[in-house]
Image (cartoon, rainbow, N blue to C red; front, top):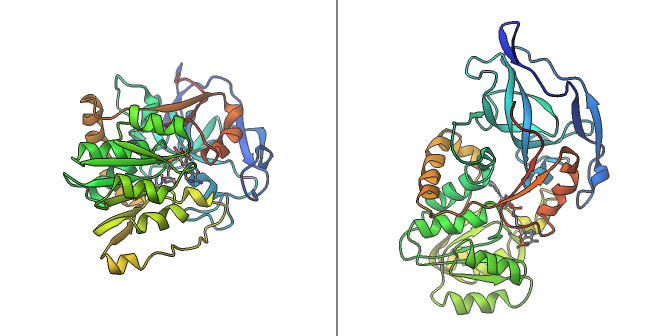
Length: 354
Ligand SMILES: NC(=O)c1ccc[n+]([C@@H]2O[C@H](COP(=O)([O-])OP(=O)(O)OC[C@H]3O[C@@H](n4cnc5c(N)ncnc54)[C@H](OP(=O)(O)O)[C@@H]3O)[C@@H](O)[C@H]2O)c1
């Protein structure tokens, strides 16, 4: 049912109730389910420039744990009493922004609620999703934060070239699984991933198309790198930091490049981390080390998504989702980012479009 509402059109909602997962208290260490509390609130009324969206999918990102710290990292901290912020996909219910219409499917910053007020002027664009013959949830994965960060990290950050040896850590993750495949698409000679356990290493090679995988939980990472990369690593896509980054420093080829994308090993419980010990390799091997934050590519998202789409159509990228069902599951899924979730993009399906 469509109906006029003030200056904007309105699409009816399914329930009239707005379930919300609010932060009950600031987590200490790993996130626990009782750090959040389930409540029901009013469906909010959009003000000038606001868009009311009914949420359909919640994406899970390790950085959500950073937003729960006092500092918040690169985003304002989520305060007790606030709904938990996430990247999400939703359907516009009512819009006071001329660029969005009721019924549009959108992707961007949302929160763990049935209904959210969003705006187009946040740190990432609120994207209107194209009508397409692939699942809309892919806009959180391969065409979302993970895929786009992998794309810009490999293509622009590391500038991977033909014939190079590339290592990607957390290679079963939403970002890492695609980073290796993109490196291959860019012509890398050898792409090696790290993952926890033999099953995950098998997945990295057999499904994500890496040339080899190193089980960082069993065995000697340094010895494996010596064996697999005797001439050194040209480009390292670092999702893990900590001891793994320190070990990689010792295996970088002269003039190698390191991209700092994340620090999974920290658990993101604090923004103040211990820096690497072996950083003098930057000097002695004339290495380059730089970071990536997807926000800096805000204006190139469409270009990145188009290139990723081309590779998906050509069969060069495997799209893997770790899909779950049910609004109530949100808090229990968040810690699995750090405790060995299944390969691919972790997504919670909460509703279907009207
Ligand atoms: N800078 C940016 O703009 C940006 C954007 C997106 C993501 N990121 C970062 O990229 C990284 C990966 O994100 P994602 O979305 O791909 O996450 P993801 O899908 O949850 O994958 C994370 C992977 O990290 C591995 N992991 C967890 N704890 C670990 C530890 N202590 N040591 C080594 N590996 C560990 C897990 O694999 P195993 O089971 O194999 O350990 C897991 O599959 C995160 O650090 C995230 O913050 C950064």
